[in-house]
Image (cartoon, rainbow over all chains, first blue to last red; front, side, top):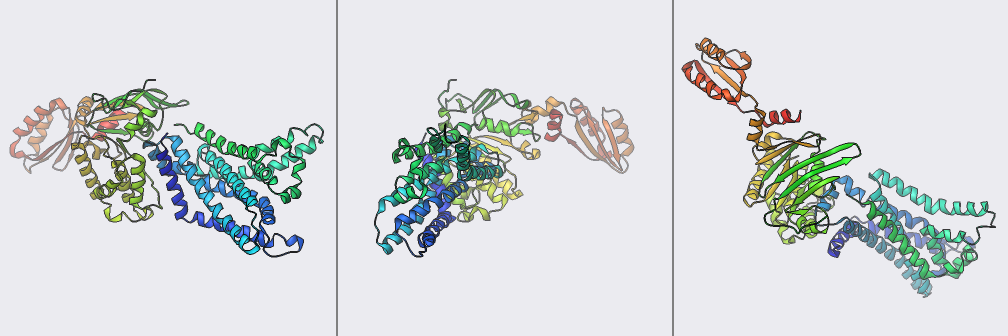
Length: 271
Length: 311
């Protein structure tokens, strides 16, 4: 494996996203999103106006969980299948570039674009909040942003996997939407159904571990333990066993969610 | 499987032994043997679905053979041992679509970096394919012919020793086709091995040293155009025009010759005769003197050869 090949491909992907203003557009989405939440997030409590960082993050957690997976899936679903459909995949693979280098180059380039958008978008709002409200507890902010990045990278990895497995772009986009529904909307419902179905008697011990099968839930757990308010909001501490209550462990699980789909993609990306 | 080091000096440019690619019951390529010498210009011809593209991709290591062995400059076209050889290969896929958002120059630089070719050569290569003026324009503004030329340009990066050109003149206007073949002639003088496929057979027959005719995944014939013609023993075609007073004498002379499928059209005559009767026909025609106004003897075209083998 040659790192420079990965780097060249990654740089092209990143530059493409900068040039077609994808990074700018997605940064703006995150900025506007975070600003609206910071300003109107307290409306239910009868307050309107800029809140400090912590309550803003609390509201953001429950909303970016929908948005980030969607953006990551849209970003990555045609990474390989797009090149295949265009006819440039054969050209790239006839060069001294291995399939693994191409896959990793694509992934790292797109990952850089996504990470940059999140850092810009959230960073701008965080800066504004710190300046306006004077609150300076940056630790929860760092936790939130890094877990958001991990969430994005995990779904990007899933998207790149789809782009290898799908035979054309249309199918890849369909699969991406299906995956979003599964992980973001359906999974928790199924889990809840299972819990109710089991009557809460037998499943108590192992059921929470099923949460690890969904990167969106891992993201939720990650944020639960960083913020008191999130904990209170979800009451999740009561169901998440202490064994999972370790941010570093959850971060490792998230890294697994980044590595596993890429490994499957490499396995299926055969001549 | 052993993977010998690239470029042993005596190895042929391309060596294919018993290469097959089966997709379930479909035999896209079936037991192909080929040897292409260094510096040779080799044509690959076949109907759509004959296995031409699959064989092309197998030669480039893009499709792994179900069975058989393929080597370029002695190195197997798979695994890490082949990376060094890839740097010496240029490939122009059929109907290549490059990146619309990049300029011609950016496209070439990207490919040059990945190929390990000097980025400084890009301007010269663009000049060579006649795109110097369009170097800073985005590819989305390029015509089909310009895109094809840009595709050719990336194949030329890094001074390749073997060029794979799949339907290379698609979308080019006659002048660009002339320019393209002028470039190929120059490359040939530098000893570059070239494998071309084309549907325009008349275009290939003047330009390849040898060619392979592919049908149903198998090589039906390999050889020079002349050798294939002779092997097919295709009849030569005779076309002549009589002078005003000579029609009767010509008719009489033709009556003595083994000419088949005869057809008269006013004072013009068309027919076929076997290759071995060539000298007899010439002698008879020479004896006609001023009774004959004009005559032509045509070799069978490559199309005739091609369809003879492929059917």
